[in-house]
Length: 122
Image (cartoon, rainbow, N blue to C red):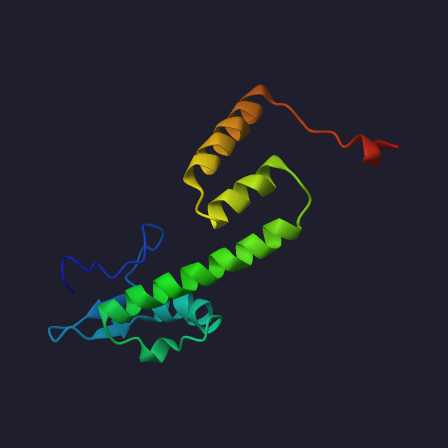
């Protein structure tokens, strides 16, 4: 495994998800197959076709874009709330709106405020 390709998708995984041999070919570990097979399949990507680090990065980018679309569809149809609006900002990659809403959410949580829907109270 090369030092610049640690074989880990992120810091959550404790074991490698792939190994790269001296020829640059990627081989999935059992953990990698468990972690990514279903995710990639949702977007029409067969994990067996991912044989290089570049293939892996491309598959991650394509599946991330699809996940964002799914999140946006879910959030758009949900009931209005600060959390929903925050999710929409994340899905749209709207950094200024995300930062603004996150500050509001953190302030609300620090104060221990709750939103009460009076329509449901009746």
